[in-house]
Length: 440
Image (cartoon, rainbow, N blue to C red; front, top):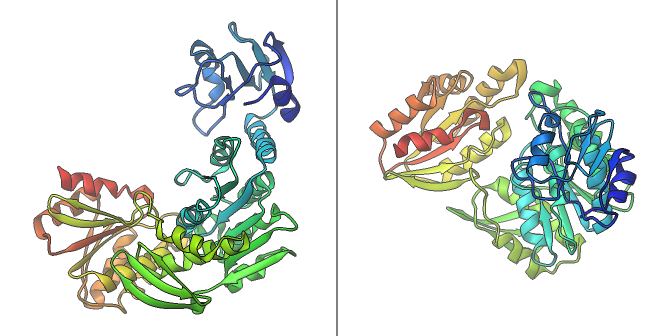
């Protein structure tokens, strides 16, 4: 994929050893478990590991070259390149390759819905372009590099999802991606525990515009807090559910009209319709026909743990435990209880909400208490129990459990195939264990 001269020039590396052929084609690898013969190994560092500890293992598996931040030259290597920071080098290489392939480039972020939106955008753009996308939710700076470097030479469109843990992280990714189009799905309370306020969350999300090309297009939800912190002088498009005429909402089906055109999704939920509007707007900007956009939305399928319908030992479950925050819990539970008979909702802790976590959970309980009383609620975890308390005080049937094993036993002993069970929690709650426990 790269010549040694390219890698030296891109990274500004100091050459510690060079016995490799000038025309050698070097593929980059950051993982000794999947390294191939002839690859150049780029060791990354994490909180609990140092990839440089595995350089010798990489050579044993056939690597002919490696990057390092040290002065050690191991036997068996034909090319050794010293750099100050291997992650910085990884980002520079990814940026170089993005510019070399030069696809239409789309960056996507948001407090919730960014992975779903990425998949919707992919479904639409794939109707016209050969498209590469972020795998699952690999949306940090390393995932960005992996996504870019997975492009084939004839890739025409690149979609990069951007997550963040704090200020500056989205700016780091977008400055190396330099997107032609940027999408923010929304600015909500997810990660408020890390960033301290909704304004800081909006500031962090709006960093995506810092790398947006000056002749690019920003697309986002029509949201005051987003507009307040968005600093971009180019073209901006804002969308809203207020502009949508919802024609039908049923199980695995949403039909709606937007700007005089009819569209259909194979999933339920107003929030999914809202997410699809950015894909429609992007498709229009890129010159896709109505038929192509409509076909793209119709072909969308949720990824694992996103409204995943399963039948386990005669019990009907919908697993939506990919992630959770107050906005996504309210929206998804509302959709579920409106569409399914004999509904049972299992809610786990929403993580990263900071010192006011209990308050946010109680607010979810207060929102749910205004809905259908013919719902059984089960909660798992310390903070989710606050939801149960509010619901019980409002006359609902709500039970709180400490762990996944206990709630699994309750489900098996008390529910049957007349119920539909909805699972929603942050990934840290490992709600897939509930399904595995039921299987056993």
